[in-house]
Each structure stands twice: as structure tokens, then as C-alpha cells.
Length: 104
Image (cartoon, rainbow, N blue to C red; front, side, top):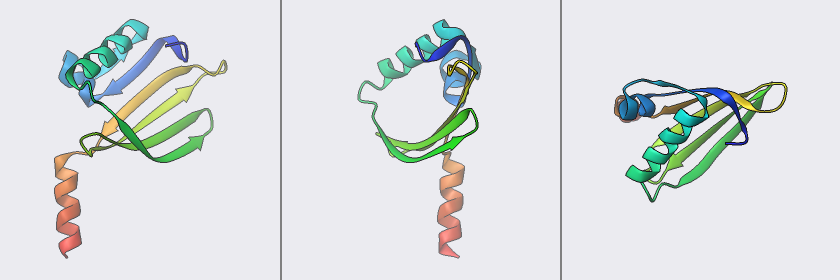
């Protein structure tokens, strides 16, 4: 947690599924999110696909142990701490769209 600002804001549909809201604020809530995610998926692993760097931000794309494609974007403040972050996961609808497009 030392890389995150104490009032970090994290957004994710996975957070909404676990806690009933998609925006978590602060170290305590982010820590609870990660702990609950690891409790539900103790074999959680990531394979990095791409890494993109921007001005005071970065984006990382990866596949998890269930072969779900995801991205995480983090924003850094002047001290180099993450003050905002978001995770997006590939949906079944997108996978169905990709299959349909490849058949055309």
C-alpha cells in the first residue's frame, strides 16, 4: 500500500460485485478489496500482455489465471503515489462480438 496515496480512488465492476459499489476510497477499502479477491481466488495469477506509459499515468493489460483479459490504469500525483486507479475486464459480450466478427 506504500505506493498508493492514503485517499486513493479505485473503480472496478469487480469491486461493485464484491461490495455493492464500483468506487472504493482509501487504503482500507482497497486493502479489503484485494483481500476479498484473493480469498475468493487464492490461485490468482497474471500474465502481462502490454504496458503503456503516459504523462503521470500507466496502463497495464494482462490475462488472469482464468484467461480473462483485463486492463488497469493508474494515475500518479507529484509525489509519485497512485491517487486514482481503475480496472476493466473483458466481458462475455465482447468475446461474443469478437467471435462473430471473425466469422464474417
